[in-house]
Length: 203
Image 1 (tube, rainbow, N blue to C red):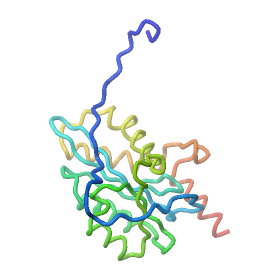
Image 2: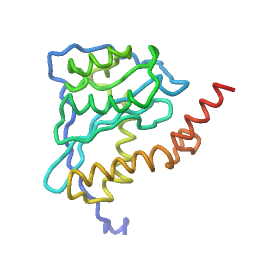
Image 3: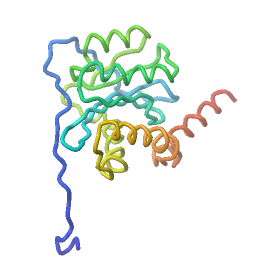
């Protein structure tokens, strides 16, 4: 069918999620030559759109740079500072935060907002923003969203916001974090990879 050009490819609409045209403070990129050796040394934060029937909603996620585990997330009809703050609060409630932790995001207005920056500073997290025009230092977040959409979102036709939130939450907590195997982690899921690391550190 491929040779005869009979395959049907679905065209996905591109929606821009990063608005870096703002007058807010821009922080340096701290990610050059930084390789995490344990959980909670680097967090990657990013946004994407999820298409529902008749509307788009916004998903904010925070990933651990060592294990690729999704440590915080939030779905909202608004792509604003409160969305990313809510995802951050979930991560802060469940993870260990130290002065070594670097939070890396793009230069979007949500991550540069005063509310978000102040919350990071209140717990001593180092702030890192992508260098202008550099998409490669955010590759793990892009890979994560690709997996989420191919293995969950594109397989469903969410009818309501509540349905989307319930399904995405179930996928992240019960599949992606605890069951999905990652080649970059030696074919184990993020939760198992973290457990092995902690056991090694305490042995």
